[in-house]
Image (cartoon, rainbow, N blue to C red):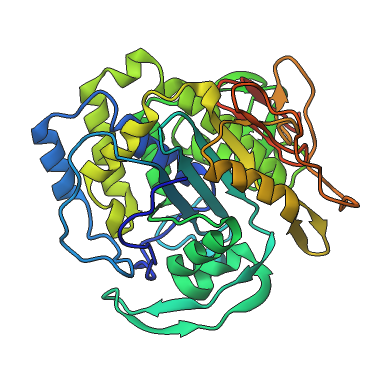
Length: 411
């Protein structure tokens, strides 16, 4: 089970700097955590990056000014929540309806879990329209001091937690949903995703069919495409251009991109270039907002170093199991328990339910669930000899070694 931090993360509301909508946010965090950390960074570069970072949000139970860990692989496991909002505030033109500037919904919520022994890692995507209980959430002022609390709610969409009680509420809701302690969190703006994708030189993805989406101004041909800048951001935002046009299909597209990103980060040409590592660290530091627990290059590097030696087939992206209901989706509780029991035991995961939308290069796509099952899928009764847990077929996703193609709309 992941090691619990000595101070439990409870996030206050972060200053409104303009925020991000989709898993492009995770791309930025993955870059900051994985790229920056592997291969070492010169001491002068670390100092420069630290001086560049903004003041982190104070978490309940944290003591401001505590020393950061040495730049080594962090001890024990890691749970890090990546949260994004649909707000357009401060991001300029080109991101849809400007009236959405007033919105503050966490339309993407992703949890990174690294095993205690650093043998595997899992990233869980939580559908934005999934109905969940919302716990009582602390209310923080701008100085990070708790000044009250928000009442609990029995059933709301998970993407309302950010607007309801800030990052603290999203963290608490995910902790209640998963049974995991989450000591770290981060978010990034739209323009930060563009800057980071440019810094890494782009990510090559496969498109089974062309993608044309007027809502994100995206027009990509079929075949292998290198994505960076605004194209990378809009590829991660599009849902009308891929799969079945749903948010669940978009999650699959995002997992395809992130798997390709991980493979690229693992390439020797990228991970052994200290100049590139430093430049990406500085881009991350100037374009992301971290919780105070993560607001130090040493901590970022220490977490990232846990990912350096994990094989791509041991890095698994999954979607929280769910089924459609009126107005959104609901959790498949039994199957979710199977997933998170395995995560708490630091088991490597095997996805049996298909990608949920993207197309494996040697097979057909598997569509997201559309109707509620009579019962949840049974637990696997014959685990592989190496201890890998075969997940119920209601859980879609892929590991980072699987090369898949986006199921474009072909227009």
